[in-house]
Image 1 (cartoon, rainbow, N blue to C red):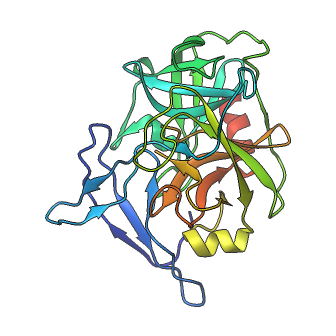
Image 2 (tube, rainbow, N blue to C red):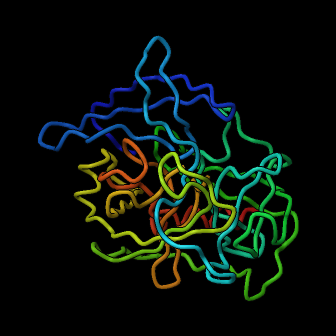
Length: 284
């Protein structure tokens, strides 16, 4: 993200998954001060060192509110597993390629090896479906500080095409403000609530680019969604999809303050990354 006058506050989080820096941004003069703290959807509730204040970190974006998905309703949706446990979501964009978030493939500053990730496709249940090993993990070269938060996974073997497994087209044009998108993922149904063993989905509304910049401090490569209170992205589906008219428009990146808050959720804007996605896939 191109941000004027950044102010970084490091927060060490012993989550067993990552140690990550949390960024608080003040916009340049003439713009609104960023409202609230941004957290990757792979960060978990923790207490800052030397502080008694619990900061709202969340591990994995999961869908708050919403409904249970039917088999075959989201044939592009995949789960990323490590040690047989859900870590993130992703979208099948080709029989051998998955698009997810870059922060899903890092443990601190270390890239997670391909051998440690398994992709699950073809079912709304985490206990069913088709599994594939990962051949390559390819995060965006300029990922960092909530910028360029996208990554590609190349599978060792192509996934079969069926009513339950089907790649999704990439959005190549701007999504109009106030459009309604569908977000999906596995996990908590509300903050602090139980996780879900089946895929859930919800609807969200696209925020105008200017409002998205004012709320997040990110000037490009981001699309923001708003939802009614206690709805939206939350705690195992970072990297998961936002879809409009059967096109992938967003990749789950971060929340502000806490899941289900009145603040918008930040997703990577797919149309901005299509050239990078296509060029990266062509190299392999």
